[in-house]
Image (cartoon, rainbow, N blue to C red):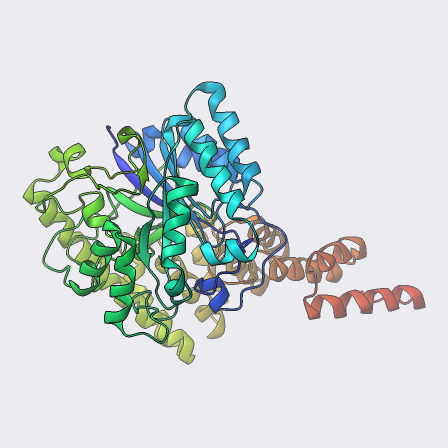
Length: 509
């Protein structure tokens, strides 16, 4: 199987149809949202960003939701679109949404590419039992088998399962005809590293979990205590990387390391930075280093598991990325990448000091520190860079340097995709009495799909547009933009004032 990249993809679902006690959504008292859209960017943009031409070949793409992956309305188009481009896709799901399985498979069968699809079916046994959905799960497993689709069944071994090990094994054996692949449960808020053992000790937890006879569980135990991953050059970030399909944010490994927007600046060369020696995790939590051979000096072998119902050519068993990228792993390249990563870390620390100065109100300090940084060759896709530039602009306004702040117009071509920057420019134009330019910038902010701060692409630019049009005497346009602000209190107050003035026949302009 010739795969050039592995994408560890995620989508924002804002909820789940189950309520498992060990889920991080449940632990944080999450309330499900009604509107579930997996993508903020047009599907065409997402597919172009993930094209074989841009990635340098086929990719194996994992997709997991922050709730149930298959809930969002447009998830089918994302999964099928990626597969129809030639990629392999593994979907992590709770296995209960029958309609989604049928929709996806029936579409892929039209072009005969359904074998590029695979699943990790998370068996949330106690919750399915409570909701009387165990037969639904088993029927969906049978449907996948009937269509020759690779999958394996996963169980998160939480304290609530301690008394159900034999029952779960019996269900898997008789109803599913597979053994479960068991993973450990972690407490949310502890770096996803502390075991969730309930009232049992760690030794009791491991001993009870061994009853599943799961090879994956045994490897998880070994990894949990073998925590040193330093001293080896890791190609996470270049060969395998994280990608939030909802926001477009790229990360080197599971949200760590260098981040930038993968769906912007598609005309620019792809930016894939390896972690190198800079991994700060105590151990490779998801075992990506071994599973995808991201450390070439280590041995590699395909993952074997008695829980698998799979074809080897789907990539579900693991992919040797060191083999497919063999010509790119000369020692000199690793050394060069290490130097580049060190330079980036130094820049990131300098940008962090700017953030601290801004939070303290030391705006003159922000301006002073940014002078040298702006002369550097900066990456406009990096949110750390964008955030520093935006804070620099506001710092200039705070110290009365409105005219100097206009110099940030030079960044418009590179940064106009970002809502924070467009909103900043709108404010800079207002401070310089350039109302027409300000309105255009606020419109761009409201249309942006990429932002660092809440509100800069929604109620804030719309409120400012309302103020601009109200000051110009355009009551109809002002009401339009104030209404777009929803429950934002200042906008509601302006709407009320406009309505009262209109009733009284007053001229409020």
